[in-house]
Length: 368
Image 1 (tube, rainbow, N blue to C red):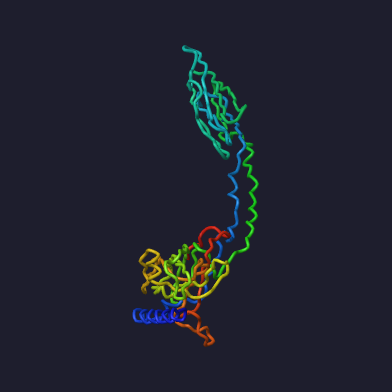
Image 2: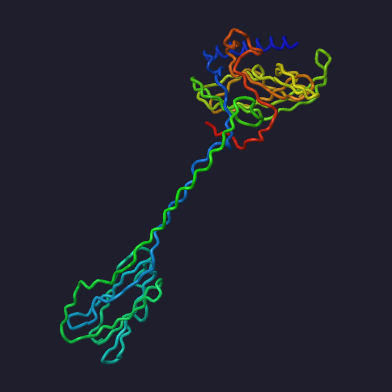
């Protein structure tokens, strides 16, 4: 019975190759060389964790003020209140004066007015105050809201003679400048975990990717679940059977068409018997097993175009037990192992999935 099954497989694969060659004229879209490598995503080294950039410089609060002159005269009635500040907040100014005649009081600015805002680095500014000729004495007050104790008052006296103020009377300096924070050091890199790599016997549910082929072909394979149920009829020898069911997903992440014959390339290769012993063989997919399992399979030769994903549900009869391993033939173009000895199944470069969920790694491999 097993030899007959193998003969059927050989015929099926031969038909597959002939059909694909007729359509595509090449074996490149039937042949995958090399084994897919599964590298555990959670064992991939993380990039070095760097500190955020050093914060902006700190500017200690500072404020100092003066007037450019303290007298007014027949030829000079405008003075400048001037200041130098650093991170000082809002600058407020007020001025008023006394008069010899009614109303005897000059209201000037009518209280404090905001004349500047200094939020960061050192800044110098001024404000012009014109004092009426009837005012013989004026008072000027100035302070910065962000600097405690910065309030200063200045008196301006009117004289009867001409004066010539020095235009170079600068505002007071002495701001301490910035305090640059100490740069933060780069974090120590994360430790590099030991990579967990599998080149065969992949876990159920994990996506694996083939190497890029010279033709541009590259594929993602995934077996999403493997299950079994008792068959209604015994096998040809009168022994009880199981039906093994699995789902096979193929995505073409390459640049050329891929031709696939899932029922001819995939089979159950290891079964765990009720005793716990394992037996190896070739139990290929069959229409009868699929129909008994209650679904209509797609077992025909088909193509998977670049960017396309196709999912196949397959079923096979085998000895009573559970499927331990399902296998897939990556290269159906030859049955020779290189030494002239035919392989057990038609084709070579065979990969397998074991009926276990991955409990070692988490996450999916990034798509190429």
